[in-house]
Amino acid sequence: MSQAEQSLERLFKALANHSDLIAKAYFNGTIYSDSQNQRTLNQLKQFKVLVDHGDDGFRIAGRLSQFLDSALSSDRIRRLDTDLSSWIDTLEQQIGLYQDAWRENRLDDVDHYLLEIQRLVFDLADNLEENTSYLLMLVNSRFANVRTLAEKQKQNSFYIARLEKLVNAISALQPEFLLEYVEEQPELHQLLERQLLRLLPKYQQRLQDILDKLKIFLFELRQIEVRAQLVQGFAFYLRQNPDYQPLDWSEHDQIPQHWNRIQPLALSAHADPLDHAVEQELVEIAQKIRIDSDALLAKQKQRRLNSINLTPTEKQTLQVPKYRRQLAAYMAKVRQQAGRPLSALAFQQVFANDIEPTIWLACVMNECLKQQHKSLQVEWREVGQGTGFTGNKKICDIVLCCQAGER
Image 1 (cartoon, one colour):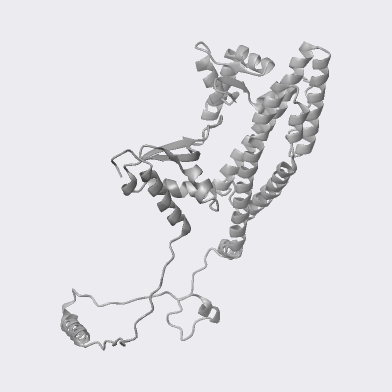
Image 2 (cartoon, one colour):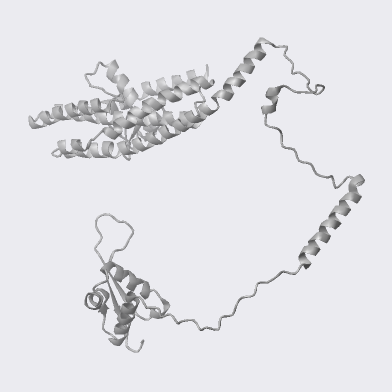
């Protein structure tokens, strides 16, 4: 039994032995792992029967879900091609049916339509992920699954056209209006935001990168196409003339004219220092090099004399920047009021109001970090952080204080 047959047998055994878990994941949409089924779910994931859903959940893979829908004659509406606008229309229909069932309090239909909406969203994600992985494999292997240059070019052109259509479709897609459509249904809103709005830009960028690589590779293929045609033509000639032998042109006065277009080989020669026959010539060359080097080193260099100007140069007065003068005044005032804290922002509003507060605080902060001001007590007044942590501290004011006796 071949390895492929053994793998297929293991897959069928896994499907048969764990059919209850697969059925549960199919009808419920999601199955969560626990201490009893964790090993089994991981095994089904390795067989690509299940895929991850959240931290500890699994769901049916998109292709297997399509097969089960077809085998069970499911009435589920599927649009999994690159026509994303039709996919959005199908999703809107399902959302409309879900909302009608919600308003009419048909709870069974609500669960059914919610599951259909989840499948539509997840199938699109699975489709994009599978296409992206496959195309990445083609790009990285440079279409290693085909041999001839013509086949590589055909496949490259085909996937470029397919990717351009898909990237343009994602670019033209505006799923934001769906969030407004489901504002009253938090569960749908969260589903569309996490699985649609966040994933589509990522897949669009990945597909665009693959598209750029495919175009570069197609350009390289076209560059070597002429050379490949020559090689293929010569190979065909050799197959037609198996007794062909290249002519010996060493005894001819002239070579064929087309040979003059061949790039000549670059050759370089040097003496062999181990050959005793040329030892004396090499010694003379080395002595001559040494004599020439000593002569160059002994040659006096003519130094250029600088002219002396007895006229005194005018003194230039440099103006101290205003922020430096204000910083010096602020530090002096802090030391004068020993024991009393002084706000940098309050000083700026009175004495340096023509300097932007943010720039002034940056200057004061830089000045406080100098060694000469280490004796000052510095209080950083920060802006209250929001819900998200960025790692930055936002300073709204700096208060300095000089202790008595530390001026």
